[in-house]
Length: 289
Image (cartoon, rainbow, N blue to C red; front, side, top):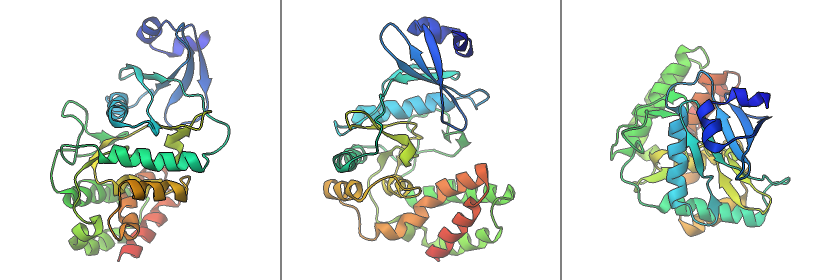
């Protein structure tokens, strides 16, 4: 019962929480399993986080849930505020995804990316403009390659250099690549709803083998952004990408564009964690040169 004191009082009262048990995992949030009369729920709190981080995540979950087919599931939002986010509980499986789960993941993500999206940029003007805890410019536009270069890659690279976590030579390498921004972003496509942070840790396979998407940093963008992130740390099998390509064929040369699309997450990791991520940014830039 002592852990209930770590949760906002309005949340406890609204959901009639009887107990809260801390969960492991996460580098910036506290996670809990909540016991309620209606069954278990998942809660996340982020003490000291910027205003709007959890409401932005909730909006991404609700947007994904609205278009997700049966092949991928998205947890229902039960409560959201700047202090806490409470979601449907997922009974996670003990093993990794099998081939059927990989195929379902590819088919489901293709359907999410194929849903109609209005522009490149924010989900709503009422939400703070950020990807996770990082402020970004999400003003709507129809020019994706310009958006990716000038509003995502360039400012993150400057911040990474200024933080001392990236070799200043990266600025010259990016300047050489900038005139090719449209080519590097690939053929023009309609905007897609993106998960925005789709590494393997944000895909959960439950006890029945079903895929779930969690922890999004959603915005409207080019679908290769998600696919590149999926390859950054591994965890998605060949069957997943093959099923995706069958359901929603990718443009020729998309593999060659992966380093360009991996620059934003690599730069964010360089800013936040330093270590080898600055070197990974340099390798990506040199591969593209």
